[in-house]
Length: 419
Image (cartoon, rainbow, N blue to C red; front, top):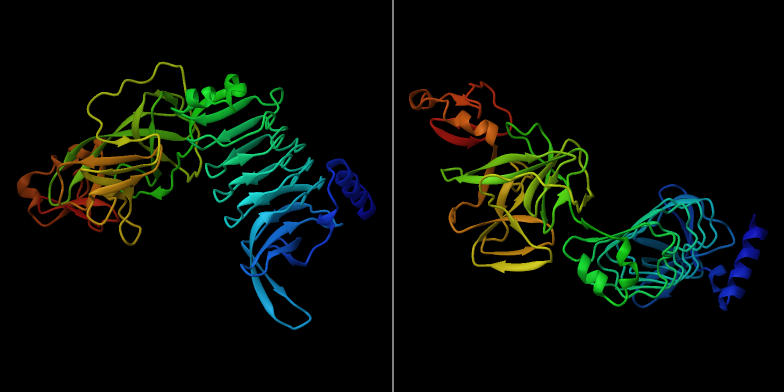
């Protein structure tokens, strides 16, 4: 095996006109899975290193740490180095490599880093990476889908020539070469909704315009809400400037009204479910399970009709806002009581992320938090008579008396309380 890999490395070095520098390394360390990873020190002053190649083949699932310790046997000192790059041809021809976790300290993936890793099926490129070199993932025939983060500014020639599905998260345009992708292999190039025409008009990207599909790159459900009517689902927000399809497992809501009392509440209306199409707008989304990257894809189907007012808003690019009171989906200081909270210390400013929804209000200026109530449960508040409500008993939002309320929103003495 070592001889075969060494021959491959020599052949690659001759083909690429480069010395076989990758075969040298300064030290090794094992990852959490017990795999040996080889490192070169790149800067002794700033204490950085890169992952490099060796005569032994990498295989299985590799987890690259954000830093590694190196003990100098000559003087006995131990130094911690940050891992900031995947070096030239580091994993070249590692056919048994199946997945790689790259830490957020890495800023560059060098040329031929994963060249012909035919068994590689999964790699997450962190948002710290700004450069991907020539042939970086060329020949990775099992890596059918890859997400390129918005931090990437330059992508080399043939870098993703074997991928058939590529997701771009940037609302700007990374510099690419004429053949970064192979037009025959590429089946779908997902670009942010609202940016498809701009991508198609860009000189670098126009060759792939026929492959472009709009999608929302930042939809996710992470916050666990425990309030009557919401069934302990995970929640998030989205904003879209085009009609999109609702993916499997997702329910979509609008915020239809605000009830300003001692504890202000927002009424949430269920407007769409999986398989339906929603029009451009801002929404709450929920899922039974936590998902970090749900894909909303642009749709030509007739969207559902959204009746009533929707108070949520959003932007398709990162934007700094002022002039209202701004609320975002969040929790209290303990991470509980999920609702809409001031986006800044006094709610007057917001640095909103692209494709995320927020709540702008000119009223409710004194309320730091607005709790959420399902429209199917909101009428329960009125089902408790004023005399009964003042009895000191506690009722849920269905108007049913509860003796030991769990976490959530309730009615006591005619007022809403948070447990």
